[in-house]
Image (cartoon, rainbow, N blue to C red; front, side, top):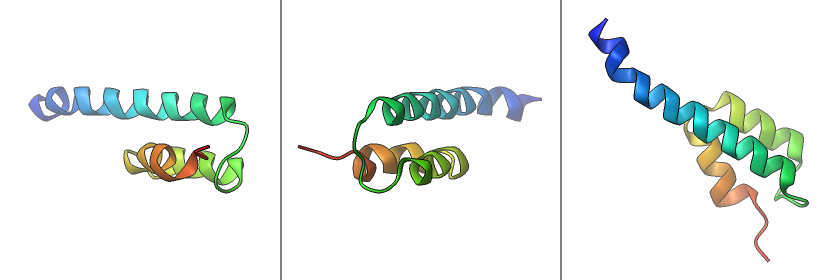
Length: 61
């Protein structure tokens, strides 16, 4: 029970980061790679996926 309470904030932060990354993906017109690939990476890779999208996936002008 204590472990779940300690992990709850991390799970919430991961979920929030994933939602923000998906919204950013939907709003971005062009990405470095196909959008469906980035959606899969964001959702399946967990905490690292959204961070990878923000660092590598968004096309910088």
